[in-house]
Length: 210
Image (cartoon, rainbow, N blue to C red; front, side):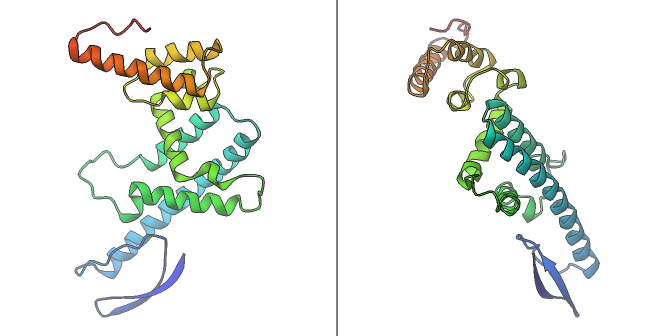
């Protein structure tokens, strides 16, 4: 946060602003502005709690990397960043925008882990976190708990793969039939055939996988 002097109507205020400033509406009163700042302060406090929890999990993950660890991190982020009001017509504040929330979260985590030189900051960048959120959406907890390394599970993050498809490939990963390169190729080939079958026959039975 930083200090800033603003003017609303005839009143001058010294305030603290966060990374995302609330735009001043020409009709906004001092009370309305203060209410918005209080709401952002509460939001920031919740973001602090999430950063605390994720920092701990990132340090644990650094010691023992697993698909489940990434899945749990992704679930926590998704529950916070994507838990917007059920009222789809409600206008979001600038600090609630999807990418800005990620940026603020990363900044807070960086501060908490700045004394951990053995933890590579690039290992928890925004693109990685978005991948973990996808993992938490596309995998069930039971699938994430299976003994398949994350680099392999990462190759299965396609919307076109349903739960049965994912289990099919996880079974073969557990049997040691794939490394990253061969799994990527197998998934690409499978999706190409699956999409072709759908075009040829929209009602085709999708249970058979070759």
